[in-house]
Length: 304
Image 1 (spheres, rainbow, N blue to C red):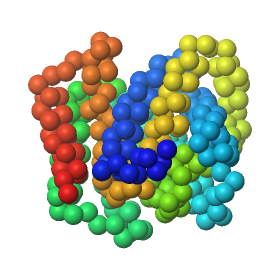
Image 2: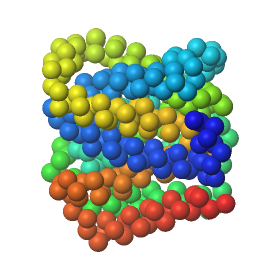
Image 3: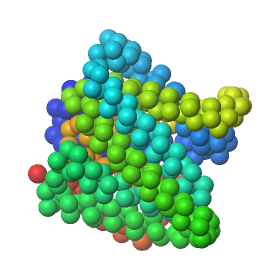
Image 4: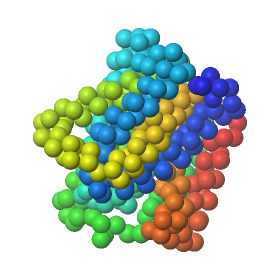
């Protein structure tokens, strides 16, 4: 399956776009589930369900449900990337959403491509061509323009809490960017689905420690009785930790981290029609202009 994807023209860029589509669907599903049982409970459940999906996929396509053929190097670096990106990064991000609201949180998360480009340059020696750099700037700028349309003053706390929330969101962005770079370093040419299994397993281990220290297990057990929350968590787990994260690893494997993370940052743009269909968002002329700028920047990343 991974070999088929790699044979396509612009395979890495297409995988990154697929990641953004998956994460847009995941965000909607987890928003519904999180309101019912809490975001951290959903976070752990999505990873556990993601491991189930990944094990089945690996058993069917690789002949082994678990990545027993991974090297010590792959286990170490992919495990570290799971802890940094999926445990620490998401913990900081979810807490930031509580303090400053999702709108400002997503705005701060638009810095992920910038962090990813810098880290991949320092750690992997990757450099973007001038046209790619222009594409990154246009895409990030278009996303920021759309997200800034509705001011977050009603969602965000003032003063110190707001500053704390922005710092937490920046920490989450840095964690996700570092997780992508660490994944690329650890994965090499290894299968993206098996690599995702290692990342998710490490993240689950990290969250088990968090749930134990903060005594959140009763919340998890109570959530198991909410069928609607479980249904949306299952849907989000399929498009998120299973398919979305696997495609994100395929993306950074097949193209530069800066390019891949920029295309993944299109999630707020892709969520506009979903939100409009649900009746929770109105598509305005400003949103259309921002979308066109972001899509134009993304198109530049496909130019040879």
